[in-house]
Image (cartoon, rainbow, N blue to C red; front, side, top):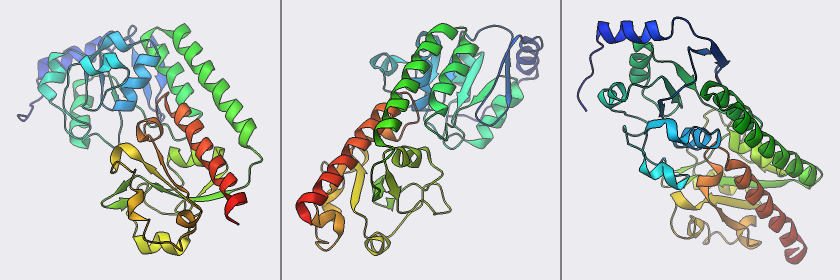
Length: 297
């Protein structure tokens, strides 16, 4: 990708387009996002963003997306503009977007600043809680002018969340290690949205207190915590979901009770609409852990 130089003419055009905005929402960082009219040409800078846009009724308006934007099936046919760390600025400008939806943790800060200088409206997507996902749908739907469809999709997700919360609110706690990757071994802390899913299911993240959002941990640290279950994301680990790493440690409670479990990380690690289904799958795994208590104690 060649270095991209901002054109004063392009800068003036983008700023002029947004001078009389009539549609506005706040993004996940509290920034005001204002458009003159509903967005017709959108760049998605994260796979979960692509899923949100499709669910909100704007899939046919995405004119560029990053790699791994593979759901729904139609997303696989979108033009690629790079990955979630480095994008092709020339392709983005050539696509003439009127909205770019960004995932701050995956996007290059330098390139985001270039987009800002061009005057292209930016929406930062970073759901921190499960409830933020349907809320994101509503706000994106407002920017797209697809309010009814987005609101209906959001209402369905809220219903599912309410049902899950009611079902698992009184379940006994399950201390677990959530394994995102095995080489290096890393997990997620209590501030990550995955921990919100863990809490809803009656789980307790053994590394919730870690300072880093996605800390690297040692095998020894996991052994010391001795979790009752280990949940690993299958799409980022070996065929067994990374369980083979723990099988030699027979005194580990998760091993002794048969609680080495795999879950589809595409469902749970992406803060998009499918995360609600991923949360339901996680809750089911933790129910299995509770049942194993009766047969192993």
